[in-house]
Image (cartoon, rainbow, N blue to C red; front, top):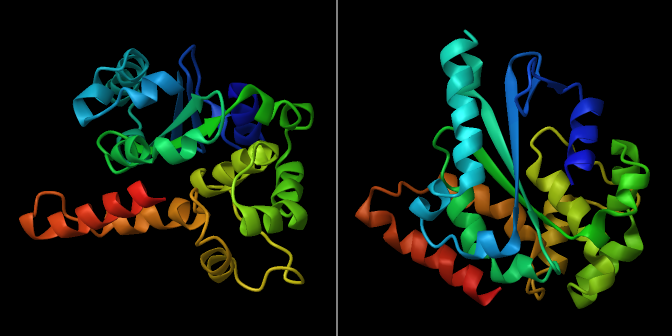
Length: 234
């Protein structure tokens, strides 16, 4: 998965930061870090402290703090993202791990965080031609989109689910659908994916919903409960 992710970085002009550290930057203005964990590690994260205790997160946080202290680049502290890739046995895990994904992504201390699930099988063909144009063509596959819309997730859509996550989670990738086939992405998703247990619109909506919540306010507990209830029913 690193090979695919780093190829996308390179094509977007996001270069490896000088030195041996696993950090990438876009013109020293936006910074990206990556860790890869497995499905069982993600499943074991039940609270924020569990995530902080993850060895891979500890290691990348140490690298991040060292860069903040020694690089002299203020943007590292202000504009850094952590891409967390999760190796799974099957992408049905997207449904059962939604609470863990939400727990991680709503926590923006040190980094903005984005969780992307994948399987080895789901990325095997993507690695043969890891270009953004190729990924965009995959995303625009109307047959896959319609099958997902009508019947929900199935194992033959694993690759498609990875491509969807890449375009939703990587903040610099733009979703460009053909106007001949897609009149409005947000409306199309809301109208066609409501019955799916892995509702694509959750991937779009979670960030905006969470950003409106003040987790320190007792008054916002109802909003939190509603989001968790929505996720448990997906």
